[in-house]
Amino acid sequence: MNQKALALLVTMMVCMPSAAYAARAYDGQPLATKNGPAYEPQTVDDVARRAAQAEAIRKLQDEPDQFAEEAVQAKQESEKEKKARQERGEDKAASESDLPITIYGDHVLYHSDTGEFTASGNVRLYQGTQRLYTTEARGNALTGDVYLLQGGRMIDPPNTTDSDWGHYNFKTQTGTVRNMKGTNGDDLYKADIAHIYKDHVDLDQGASVTRCPAVEHPPCLEVRADHVVIYPNDKIIAYGVKVYLKGKHIYSRDRWINRLNDGENKQSFVPHIGYDEDQGIKLRYNYSYDFSDHNTLDADIKYYSKIGWRPMFTDTQDERNYYVRYMEGFDEDDNNNWIRKMHDIKVGYKPHRISDSLPLSYSAYASHGLWKDNRIKSWHTEYAVFLNHDPITLIHGDRPLTLGLGVGRKWINESERDSTRKTWLYSATLRKNLGAGFDTWLGYYWEKRQASIFDYGRPDMDREVQFGLSKTFTPRDNVTFMTRYDEAGHNVYEYIWRWRHDFCCFRLTFEYRDKRYKGGDDEWSVQYELFRW
Image (cartoon, rainbow, N blue to C red; front, side, top):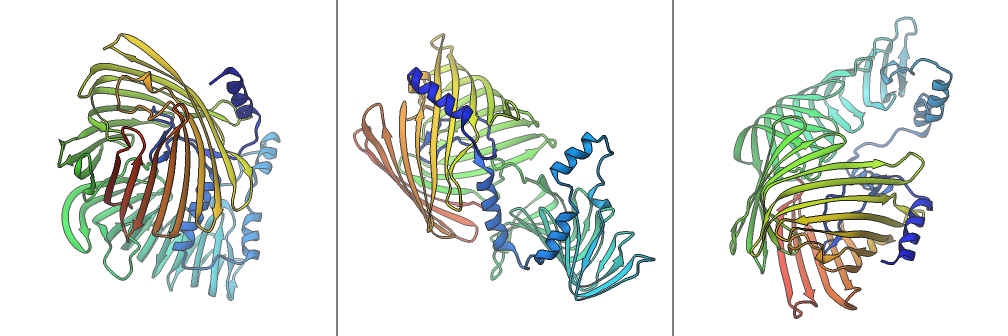
């Protein structure tokens, strides 16, 4: 990339307005693969839109009326008010548990001297972000106690809990419910008795957790346990676990931990099954064990009918600002290139803002280990830094057009050649929602292929132009078409067609690659996996 183009990219990155986003750490993967853009931040709008869709599906009760919503919002301290209060040197604002309780209902009787109340009909109680819905309630507004005599629904984001009977205290944020069921993100849980605390929920007697939304047949996969502890937005810990598949007990274990905020750390309760022409039938099983809240050992066991066993063991220390990862075993990239990593350790620095006034974030990593493939064995040292601009919204509205920009620098040293190679990294991705289930993207990605002597992890081409079009026909069916163009070679690299069908909890994926390189070979693959876990 010439200096003028680089100057233009940097100028655009610094000057253009942007939307807020959730950053992801760059850890050395190619900027684009056969699966699409591999590294780009997500806008908060994207995250919020998906969350709203999921909530709409799960929602069983209407939202409160507009007047009630405005009354609740009026009691919340805005950021502007908070800043003004701090500038005046006033004490910290009252916590949510100190806010007044607002009660609505068809019939409400309140004793101002004692604080006792009874309410019936369409009953709604609010305090801060907490909400209670029921048909009959009594309690004391001064002590914060509320009894749900006919059961009801309690919403304390991200938790939603339904019960036949309940007691809750708004002041202490504790309570007990009977015959309850609820949701926390993707997880659905139920129990005969549950105890609610300020930072977690305990499920006792008949506790179970699943992600299967089925109502007409037993859950595809269900975890039943003697005791379950749910930490919202963090993790679920189950003790005395029995795992059921379609209502049949398949195995037991002493403890199971499922982290709610780490999309990469998912446990496989049943093997993932797949097939492709190069490697044959694929069986994959993943098991994770938590040594502590921040340290996890992950065993990713893979077997292929044509090439045999390919296990990978990873130990990760995950802290707020950084992570340390140790890997021992076999790793594969998107093009079925294998590498054996021995004593490989990586230290990564998670995305951080350069300053509050600039829409720029940076991340970095450094790794060192012994790598080996069929041709080469070398001590591999790699480090890089990557700079991201917040996604830029060029067209606002229900069908936004966004632009993602990134630039980085990578250094790779191999003992086999006793040399260090380096490359710039550039990425630009336009995304557009076309409506009627259509989404499209157009991207440009630049990274030197010859920076690495291994085929594994190497970008498919130095300069790639990628176009993708995705059509969602139903919530369960999606078809994607991609064109990958080699800008340096001035020819089409490959066409890709991919069809995905979601069953209740299992996903079936067919993929066909019309390769225009290496003599124009084609390739097809199929995969069947449990995708909700």
